[in-house]
Amino acid sequence: MAESPEEVAVLVQRVVKDLNNAFKRNPHIDEIGLIPCPEARYNRSPIVLIENKLGVESWCVKLLLPYVHNKLLLYRQRKQWLNKDELIDITCTLLLLNPDFTTAWNVRKELILSGTLSPVKDLHLGKLALTKFPKSPETWIHRRWVLQQLIQENSLPTLVTKGNLGTVPVERIQRLVQEEMDVCCEAAGRYPSNYNAWSHRIWILQHLGKLDVKILLDELSSTKHWVSMHVSDHSGFHYRQFLIKSLIGRTVTDNSILVQNQLVNEPIPSLPKDEKNEASEAACTEELRVDLPNLLKEELELCTDLIDTFPGHETLWCHRRHVFYLQHHLNNKLPLPNVQLTSVDSSDGTLNNSHPSTAVSHVTHAMDVDGLNDSSKQGYTQETKRLKRAPIQDSLGLEMEYRFIDNILATCRDVEQDRFAAEYRKWLVTFLGQ
Image 1: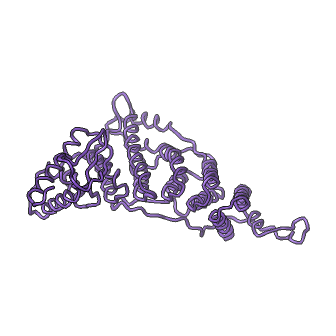
Image 2: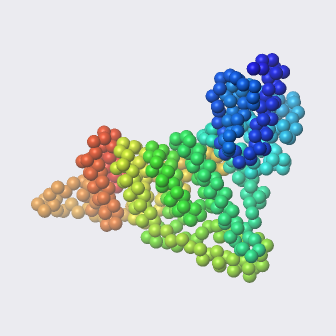
Image 3: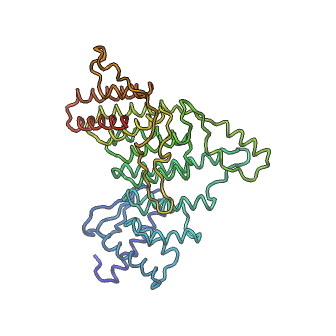
């Protein structure tokens, strides 16, 4: 192994070159990783490429990382000159080994703004870095910046093409949205409760998907299996809460409502007025019918199945509590305290949570307490009073919740499950008793 600074410099330059050549030989590399190898036992490159998987022998990282790190810092301090190709190679190597090095991402931002580097290549680099470091916050932030550049610079396809009015942009944007969803899903699977991945997914819905109802429904359907396989991942269930609340916020609280596909509200450039009107009328015919009560009912059924199958997971009970909260507001035609459950600040990429407040006013009915001395009304409990107070539709759901809790307490022998069920009952009494 090289020991002198000159030998180290030559070795590292060769490794960086081998890494760059690997991407040229196979532009479809989809995963990176470290190969445990304390020492260089063979006179060969530490870069291993098998099919679409790229591996780096671990012995060279302790030499490679400090070298490229110092070289980039010298460049930023204007103490050493690097041409554009060298900058691309150095930052690529550095970010694959340490994607939270902000300076390297900033250099690549400058290269993108100067037209030297393609934004699409940076999306691919970020995707590779996330296979090894799925929670890297700097990688997610840079990814959002790149997507913003694609939108602002009109790099996305034009909205219409001759002879195929309005179909290409929807398909292209939906494909870009789907690609980002796949990246988020893979990162979420690699790191439990990956808050950064799920918040990026919300950002995509807000800025690329424009909270389109069809996309929201597709996401609700596609994440059902994922949360069923990750019952302790609160971030995944929080995402479903965001989807449900966004659907409620995009619609009027009625049993069945018609909502317009939001993608059709985009302006259609370079068309005569008559063609614009025809295009708008054709696009507006795309409508979706959303049955919000049934949607919430299905979500409660999902909670029931998961709680019965996987006892003792607090995440499931927290999710059930939130779904019932939304169902209660919908049944009573009450405005939600905050329409947007979660918002991602595009400037710094942080996720802002707005927890629903229970301090809401709702219509109450007079409690039937006159028959307390009637023998036919023996066993009149505090919970019965609360059932009588609630509207009929809401009281039916509440009665089902109490039956579900009673069944859990009577049949389950899991201590944690019993505790969560008792806490959920207490929450119901407190929430509806205000």
